[in-house]
Length: 426
Image (cartoon, rainbow, N blue to C red):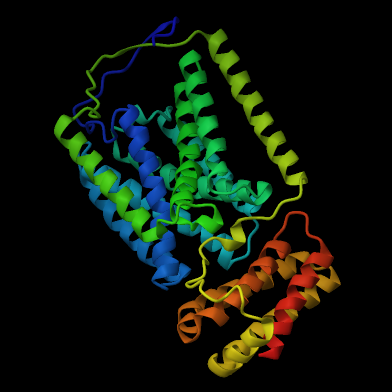
C-alpha cells in the first residue's frame, strides 16, 4: 500500500559495488526467518542436551561453523538463497548458544544479558549509520555494509533469545501461551509500518521479535505434553523445520521471487512526517504497555518454566511411585560416590548462601549445580533412570526458587533441604 508523501530519489550505485546481498522483504522472508529461529532453538538444545556435547563445546563448534559459512557468504557478489539462509540458520543457533552460556554457565541474570545485547546492538547501529548513513538492508551493496549487517543479525538472535527467556521468567507462561505475545507484537508492528512507521525501524523490531516467536514455537512442538508441548522432541522438530527451510530455499532459488531487482534510479514514496511521528508514538505506547503487562504478570504468583527447559527426564515409568528412601538406596548403590559428594557440596553451599541472604551468590552456586547435574545426566540416567529422574524433579524446584525474580527464602530453603536430604541419604 503506497503512502502519501514526498518522492525520494535513491542514488546511483557505482559499478564497483556489489549487487544486493539480501533477499527482497516479502512474506517468504518472514516465513523462512521464523523457520530458522525455530531451528536455532531446537537444534541447539538437541546438540547440547540430547547428544551430551555440552554448552561450551557446542558454542565453540558453531562459532567455527559461523566463521566458515559467513566467509563463503561474504565472498559472493550477489544474493544466493542457499548461502544466505544457511548463514542465518547457523547464526540463529550460535546466537542462542551465546545467551545460554551467559545465563546457564556464567549465571548472569536474563535482564542483564538483555541489557548487554541491546547496548551492543545500539552501538553497532550507531557506528553503522555514522559510517554508511543508512541502516536499510536494501543498501547492502558493499563489504563494510554487509559486515555491519551480519554482526547486527548475530546480536539480534542473542538479544531475542535473552528477551524471550526473560519474558518466560517474568510470566511463567507455558510454551503455547508464550507464542501469543511476540506474534501479537509482530502483527502490531506490521500494521503500524503500513500506516507510515519508519520502515527501517519497523524491520529491525520485527526481526528481533521473530527470535522469541520461533523459539517458543520450537519449545511448544518439542516439549512433552506434561510440559505443555506437543511432544515431538527437539530432534524431530529440527528435522521438520530444516526440511521446510530446504523446500522454501529450493522454491526461492527456482522462482527468484525474493531477488531484489534494483535499478540505478529508484523512486520511493515515503510517508508524511506527521504519519511517521504518529506511528512512532504508537510503537512507544505499545512498548510501554508491553512492559506494564510483564510487570503485572510478574507480580502474580507463578513458577518459572526456564528451570525445566532442556532437562526433561529420559524415562517416566515407575517414577511416580518411587519413594525418597528407594531413590536414596538406588543412588547409593549405583551412582558414583564422587558425583554424589559433588552434588551435596554444591547444594550445601547454596543453602548456606540463601540462609545468609546472599541471593546473587546462591544463584551462581545453583548454576554450578545445574551444570554439574547436566554434565552427568547421560551417565547417571543410564545407571538408573528412575533414581535419576526422582532427583532431577527435586533439582528443578531449587533452580526455579533460587532464580526467581521475587525469591522467597522459606521456599528456597525447603527445596534445598529436600534435595539435600535425598543426597545425604544416598
